[in-house]
Amino acid sequence: MAMISLELAKQNLEIEIANTDFDDLLEDIIIPTICADAESFMGLKYTAVTSHIEYLDGGMSQLFLEYANVSNLSLYVDVNRIWTEVYDSDYYSLYAERGKVKKNCGTFPSGNKIIKAVYDGGYAEDSLPADLQGKILKQIAYELRRRKDLGMSAVTYPDGTINKIAIGEWLLDVEKVLQRYGRYGL
Image (tube, rainbow, N blue to C red; front, side):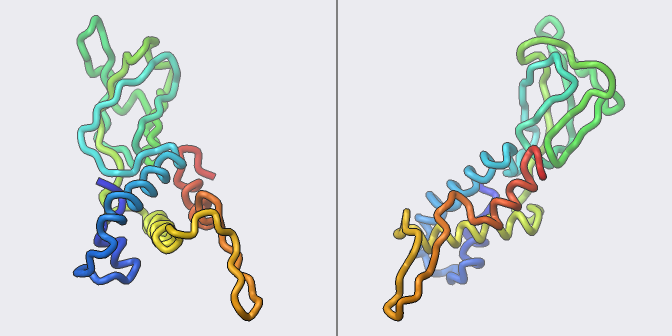
């Protein structure tokens, strides 16, 4: 499930819910592509998950989880191929918004995929930060309206005026918000 629903995108685009002309295009291509690209750009996943299991390498004082907005974190260590919960929240600090776990003293045990993290993460659509949701909706609207004008950077009108069009991957204000919510926010 994407961070943005079809209904919310249509509401933002001022398309009647009953009008299904753009449903397939929005639901199958534009919304999932922009949401996936945004998560990739930010280096964090924002789509809601529960009881997500992730295996991480040890040997460092920090662990970087896949998802933002982490809660209900449990950490286990692989001792002789038996997962044992060894770390309670007194042993580490959780930076939930960035999906970062830092051991308060020393490092996590060394080894490849030796640490198992089980947690809830991401955001439900109604709890996604408003500015992030707004900018992703803006990018969806832009992509829908410009889908046939790929690569065009300017339009000249009959009266001689020229309209310049952004051709970067992201609209400038959208990119600034994505940077702010990324793993290494500004």
